[in-house]
Amino acid sequence: MRYLSKALFIAALAITPAGALADDHIVETGLINQETRIIEGGGGLPIAMTVAGNPDGPAIVLLHSLLGSTLNWAKQFDGELLETHRVVSIDIRGHGASAKPWIASAYQDTQLFAEDIDAAIRASGVEKPTLVAWAYGGLFAMDYVRHFGDTDIAGIVIVEGNGGLTPLPKPADTPEYRQRVANSKSPNIAVIDKWTSEFGDYLMRSEALPVDEAEMIRTSSMMVPHYVRDAFRDRPDDNSDLVETIQTPVMFVVTMQEGPSVDMVSGIAGSLANGSVATVETNGSLSFWYDPTAFDAVLADFVAANQ
Image (cartoon, rainbow, N blue to C red; front, top):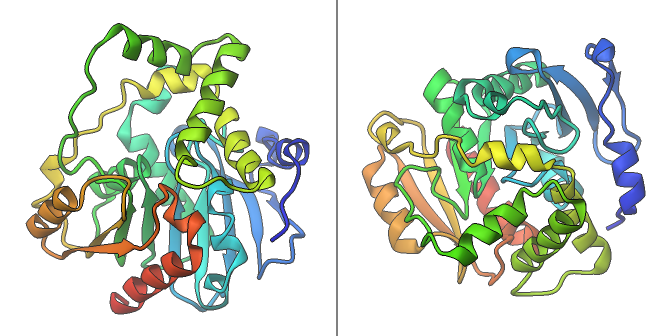
């Protein structure tokens, strides 16, 4: 697998001027039918969207976690999944190549996130996609369900998360915790750089990644400004009221050691009209990265079963 250097990443992911929103930007990567462009999302915000793969295959829409981007799905964009599926990835507002407005409310209104996802689905031309959301990204998937329902999607896959379908316990409010939070959103670039390095180490704690792959994850995180990180602290995260309304199939993907406990997601799955749990046999918190072959196979089976 070939990866770009950090400098080339940042140059390649630069925001397209607002006046060019309607333009398509073809990226020569050697991937199957890949296209990256800027679309108009909720409230008119520029949102980056990448589409690749088999135009006639079932559609998958990838939603990254907090401090992520399309870069996190690099192995899904460089594997056999593209031969059989149409794959769409969105840079969530405030992340990656999408716009990063200063106003906190741009990140705290769940309808705006839902509109971003809806705009990407419509712009990509796919029908009945499966939403695949990593960790915090499960909240974005639930934003879509809350405001657009689930009749136009084939299913939802939540990877190492619970989508807010049951409240998670809050960390103890200790001085150490408050300091970590302050560091995570500090406007001091040296402080936030150090925190982001530690965040990357946390994600990769079970197994070291090659330097170029680790650099991708770090670059993705560093593209999220301090004020965006701060605004997300006040974003709604309780979607327990949606449990009784979701009719589309929902699969929770867990790993051997990381993410929500099997008991927790099994309880949610049992409360849903059509819920299930799948385990990828890897110890990492990035199952789609550490073992993409196994992850993609689980995903493809779910998609095929719900067409």
